[in-house]
Length: 111
Length: 111
DNA sequence: ATTATTGATCGTAATATTGCAATATAATAA
DNA sequence: TTATTATATTGCAATATTACGATCAATAAT
Image (cartoon, rainbow over all chains, first blue to last red; front, top):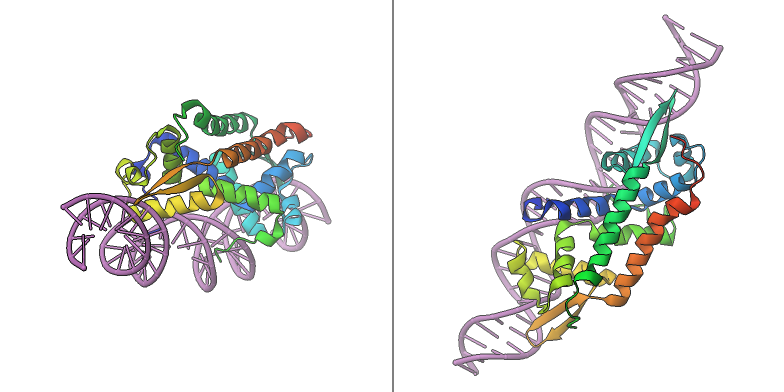
């Protein structure tokens, strides 16, 4: 099939999985880490930095933007991309809660 | 293509992405959350709990086990699955560091 | 021994993802 | 206007993922 049965799961579970999925590619991890440090934040730099084609980078940027990890501002001919601070904090918290939930709700370690 | 160019990225970036990718499916999120709370931790319960076929659950469990999120112990005919505490702590920390890295290394918010 | 029961694996169909060349678009410069 | 530069989109090929029926291997119950 290849299609995920999203209707079997809660909105939160689907959202969590979607967020993780977007982080599930090394190019997107690398883009985010590059944006952490970038002062210029011009899209074109990324094509130099990573070894991927411009079209491929553009696609990854779109995915990161769609879910909200990053935001883009048009600056003349180029586009300035950077982390979306509000969303970043939100996602960071969601992941934290997910991982901590194990410690909070744990009943017994039966194996 | 459909193949990820892992050689373009660091071991850490690939590891991070792989970990996120495994979390990138709602069934696997649901399985983990179920294991948080389970006291019996028998595999078969998951087939009842989620609405997926046994073969599908088994595949998801394998992925979770391969990367180390969970561990399985054979108990006669059935298999007892639960969170791997050491790995859980490790992965939790890696995600934390990744998200916090933004705040630590941030130079300027240029857009 | 025979027959459930449990869970893993195999094979396969349907769909998704990755990557890139080619092309389109949009803003500025000459 | 025309060229140039920067990014987005489209279309496609290759590969990966998701899901499940069928089957297999191992133990348990009869």
